[in-house]
Length: 238
Image (cartoon, helix red, strand yellow):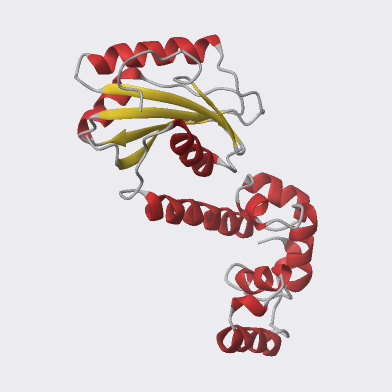
């Protein structure tokens, strides 16, 4: 906890109880963004007025919950003068939100077009600041079995082991797969390394009877499809 967050007593206890009571009676819809963040921070900062801290966090992260909870904890610490524990608390909320979103669509998603796979991949990696490589495992009816994060890397590259991909595809009992990774820098076009990796993965999975339908590159809401652009050619694309 930072020096500014340390207090011997809590003169704000009455205020906190009033805020909690208001939340219970009126619900979160009645709260402004900074007020809801103030309430959340009670769990990370036991003795201090969290209202100015909430304002500071919102001001430094474009008044966006999405940007804040998906930021690097070090950026939160340096920009807002909060403790590492507070920053970890906020970024852990981001991870919970991602997993809730993944649970909501996993097992029910039906992917039979470029648009569907592009939207799924974009939603999955919308706020990532480093590259991640996913494999979407599909059954015979093109229903999503699970989305597996194979690897995560830096802002400009991610290392993928072909053996790991084959192992995970077999364990999921996938009939076909779609690869997806993000380019945080904004350039959607695949690099030579992206193309070579995709071809190597197609070859490796073919030996175990698993078809590669597509490889999607995302950046924000935009995406690039290997299948649509002729980098993957087979009779089983969607």
